[in-house]
Length: 185
Image (cartoon, rainbow, N blue to C red; front, side, top):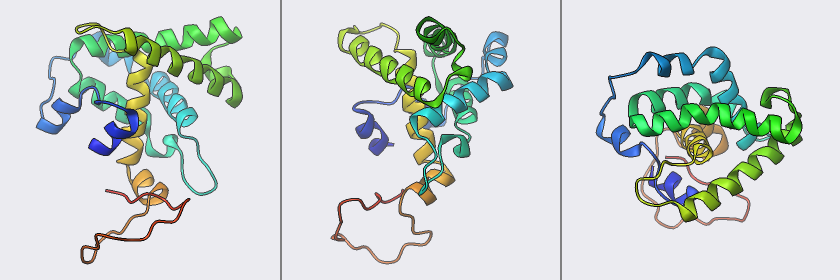
C-alpha cells in the first residue's frame, strides 16, 4: 500500500478503511445504481487507458479494475468521496464530449489518452490549491484506484512485476539492471 502511495505522490483515498477492515454498510440505492455494468465497463476503459496492455504485461482490464473500483468506493470511501467519485464518471464523460464531441467510450485510444492527460493535469492543479475539507478530485481517485488495484491484482503482481510465489531466504542486496521489473508484494 505504501509503495502505491509513494508512486502516486501521497495518500490513497479510502486506504484507512480498507486497512482496518471497516465496511461502509449504508449504501444508498443511488450508489448501487451508479455501478451499473455499463459504468463498470467505463471504469475498465479508463483504467486500461491509464495502464494499457503491452507485449510484456496485461492491462487494467485484465485486472477487472472497474469491479475493484466499485468495491473500494462502495465499501471503503466516505459518503463525500463516494459522491465525488460517482459524479466524476459523468464529469469525465462530459469532458470527453466537450473536447471531442463524443462519449469517452467512442473515442480512439489516442483521444482517450489525451483526455486523461488533461484531466490528470487538472487534478494536480486542483490538489495544489485544495484546502482541508474540500472534496478530492474525481480523476485523482480513479487514477489511484487503477494503480492500486492493478498492482495488487494477480495479473499485475505476477505478470507486470517480478514475482516469487514462495520466496527463499532474505537477500538484502540484489543487483538491479535498468529496465528490470520491480518486485511484487
